[in-house]
Amino acid sequence: MRRHVALALLLVALVAGCDEEEPLPPRPPPQAALPPPSAATTDTFADSGQCAQCHLADAGPVLRDPAGHDISPVGTWRASMMSLAARDPFYLAVVSEERQEGDAKQVDSTCLRCHAPAGHVETSGALTFEELLTGKSPAAVLGRDGVTCALCHQIKSDRLGTETSFTGGFVIGPDRAIYGPHNSVVTEPMQFFVNFTPTFASHMGRSEVCATCHTVIVKGVVEQATYLEWRSSSLSPGKPCQWCHVPQVDEAQNALSEPISKFPAGLAARTPYGRHEFMGGNAYLLRLVAENEAWVQSGIPAADLQRAIGAAEAHLRSAAKLTAVGVERKGGGAAFRIIVENQTGHKLPTGYPSRRMWLHVVVRANGKVVFESGALDRAGRLAGDDDGRVRKHLDVVSSQDRVQVWGATLVDADDRPTHRALAARRVGRDDRILPAGFAPTGMDVTRTATIGVFSDPDFQPGSDGVGFTLGSVPVDAEVEVTLLYQTLTRDLIEKIDRGRTPLTTQFVDMARASPPEPVTMAELRFTIP
Ligand code: HEC
Ligand code: HEC
Ligand code: HEC
Ligand code: HEC
Ligand code: HEC
Image 1 (tube, rainbow, N blue to C red):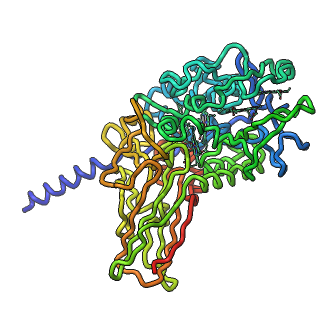
Image 2 (image 1 turned 90 degrees about the vertical axis):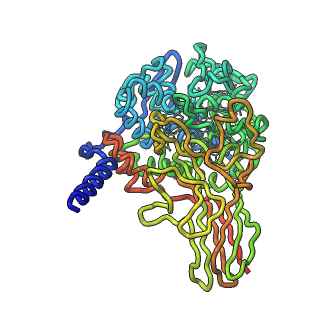
Image 3 (image 1 turned 90 degrees about the horizontal axis):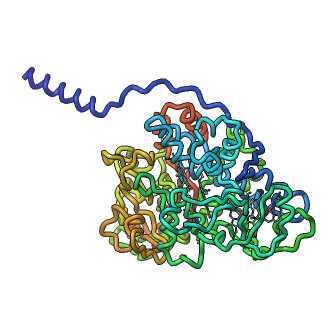
């Protein structure tokens, strides 16, 4: 008998021992504030502040839409995540974790390539993370300028669309040609002020320019395939990324026609004219930047960031459409199916795998909630959230403690979810909603594959549906459906805290003070008669 108890205790100790992680070192103090923007000119680049002399709206009407909004390239781009790519506290925290776990040099050459591309190119790939965070060299200043004007506008047509162009494989010229969509431009002002020559090049309007960074394949694992998703959809080739992300219309959807530079005065208007919104869904990080300007030192006017937060939320509301089908009574209960239609040019959600989307469904009768699925609890978690396991795809939700969450999860060598690209071995799950007409060919078949969706007949190109079955529902019950989007989970914030670097402390403190609330993408109300 005693031997049994001892054995049981030993077993308990062993099991506990397996699960228990090493005690964590104390939290280091947070990272010091980033340096503010400054000027840098090199043989290849100039910082965005120099372009602002002519391509940023001032008090006058030039580079403004009829409603008076700043539609200048600098005014719109600077309050986007593209400009913030190297000051983004979430990104910086994850890089610091990767460096702690792996070879710092390899991490730097991988992770700075797209987020600090001008600094990366300037140093032929040798820019270090320390230099990016604190350095005064031109490469560090250009690196902190994110996906800066002179980087994107110097991408050559070489390689575009081919395998070698992906994962940061853009080619930057030595000839100081700034490519743009217009023919016969006035070249002297730019040559004189910044020693670049504005040059017509049709490739700037193609998705293949964006593909260089929006196809992220790290050590053979496809972390992001936004471009590959797009080229497998019916939007390709006619409706490129620019069609939605550099819109040629104003906020009232009227076509824009505007001079593209405020200097020299009196330039003729050019059509089409694109707004450099680069709006995705990341209202949350824009908010963290706005709330922590003292640390981020973006130099972006607060009003511009507020406008961008609103625009990102509005953009999310354009991404999906909800409909209810098959609403019926079944004895004392009811059933219905909610169809989510993807209105974007790629999977929904796309991009960085921390994004997720789900339906919050509330059924009320006589003012009382009789069914609810998809609510966050007080700790900000959803039913079924489990750090250690990959979530399962659902076609039908029949109890309140279940919820279908669309997203992608990378897994490590032990098949456990990981947010670290360099620890990932494969994609463990991907049930994001496919774009319209999705029909991948060749290598894209595996690189954009849906993973973990079984026996779900309405998981189709362009949409997915979720059935709800309710055990008992009073007559005239009101159903309220909300499609929600979240940039990252609170669990991920806590996981990052275990990284124990000055940058993880910094990011986690910011994120705990202002957690990632879900953003409404679409709403639908109906009655079960
Ligand atoms: C090939 C280009 C490329 C490389 C290389 C790259 N990234 Fe990114 N990264 C992106 C793009 C594009 C996004 C934005 C996707 C989106 O918004 O959904 C992004 C987003 C992120 C985000 C989310 C940021 C946010 O604000 O939500 C983190 C974190 C991140 N990257 C970390 C890393 C780390 C760590 C590395 C190195 C292992 C790395 N990235 C390498 C292109 C790249
Ligand atoms: C001194 C003013 C000035 C500065 C500084 C300046 N530009 Fe320009 N830019 C112009 C003018 C003028 C044009 C041509 C306008 C026209 O012909 O309609 C132009 C045109 C362009 C075009 C369109 C080219 C085409 O063929 O479609 C791009 C892109 C561009 N500039 C980018 C930049 C970038 C990037 C910087 C910073 C590195 C910059 N500019 C700095 C004045 C300037
Ligand atoms: C990620 C790439 C990217 C970045 C970064 C970028 N641009 Fe552009 N830019 C474009 C694209 C794409 C177009 C439109 C091309 C088209 O529609 O054919 C464009 C067009 C332009 C034009 C011509 C105006 C028009 O809409 O016709 C100017 C001027 C310009 N950009 C300047 C800038 C300046 C200044 C910055 C930095 C604040 C900047 N760009 C940042 C991609 C970029
Ligand atoms: C038909 C319009 C449309 C086209 C075309 C399009 N997008 Fe988007 N994109 C959207 C909308 C709407 C969202 C917001 C929903 C979301 O975040 O998934 C979005 C989101 C994004 C995001 C942020 C994803 C996230 O949640 O973090 C990235 C990155 C992106 N798009 C890149 C691209 C690239 C690169 C292309 C071209 C290969 C492209 N888009 C083509 C409409 C479009
Ligand atoms: C040099 C690399 C690079 C190129 C080229 C590039 N991007 Fe990006 N893009 C990034 C990175 C890095 C991020 C993520 C920054 C972050 O969140 O930290 C990003 C983010 C985005 C987002 C997400 C913004 C949000 O708020 O969620 C959109 C949309 C986007 N890019 C569109 C485009 C389009 C359209 C093009 C082509 C005209 C393009 N990008 C070209 C690197 C690039």
